[in-house]
Amino acid sequence: MDFRLLRYFIAVAEELHLARAAQRLGIEQSPLSRAMRELESQLGVQLFDRSTRLTRLTWAGQVFLGECRRVQATVEQAVRSAKAAAQGYQGHLRIAICDSMAQPRIATLLARSREDEPELEVRVFELPFAQQLKMLHDDLLDIGFAFSSAVHDGLVAESVWTDPLAVIVPTRHPLLAHVDVSLVEALKFPLVLCHPESGSGYRHQIQAMLQNAKTPPRVVDEVTTLGVMLTLVGAGYGIGFAIASQVQTLQRPDISIRPLAGTPPMLSTYLLRRKGEPTDPMKRFIERVKDGAAPVDDAPGL
Image (cartoon, rainbow, N blue to C red; front, side, top):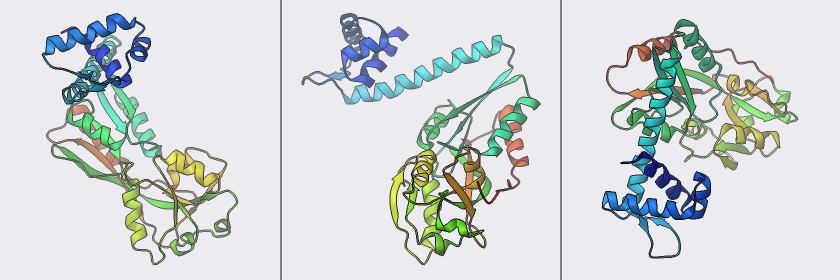
């Protein structure tokens, strides 16, 4: 089958509009329409529901779209691998980090990998937890980092380090009068939290902390990423919880950090991979992860 047809199909299936898909591909609408009919003829199935004026995918079309995306990703990785080999790389390691996970440890790990194995090409992607699982399952990723251990069959999630949670507040806020903040004091103010369906696992770990609190939290907004949470906190919508070292890397002038008093709750970071014997580059990277799992100092303010 002509790979061009698959690329055309992905564009039409994602746009669900022939004119927009043709513009995206840089071709005329008529040959694109003929290409879709040719593809359906080759497959012997109907990919589009043409019973209405709106373009819709049939169930067969939806299934085929998922497989086409996987094939496209595989081909793109094959091209990158060939180019990397031509540049002298002897192997590759594909690593994903969960949305907005800007942790100093990961930067240190990547830097050490470059120093220890300059011949190894390390590719880094920022992907949601659910997409990491799919790409790991399809062998399009080697390692993922996330805040959730809710993996399905065939994958392994291992807690590789923990970090204390801190309170994130606007730069002008009553809680800044405290060197550290008790959870009781923090929960007197409205909260901005990650949405439980964002899939990162961040909210579920924080929710476990909040369930043990005597004061019920007042959640004023739920967001999908750390960046949006920090923006709303900086704007004064409420306060939030995050890893101090992670927030400090973003250098936001509109927010400040205070540690939680007493023994602070810990947020776990998980390394995700497929079950079975890892490759030699993976083994060496995982060893570096374990070597670098010592706590990172969290400064009290920003």
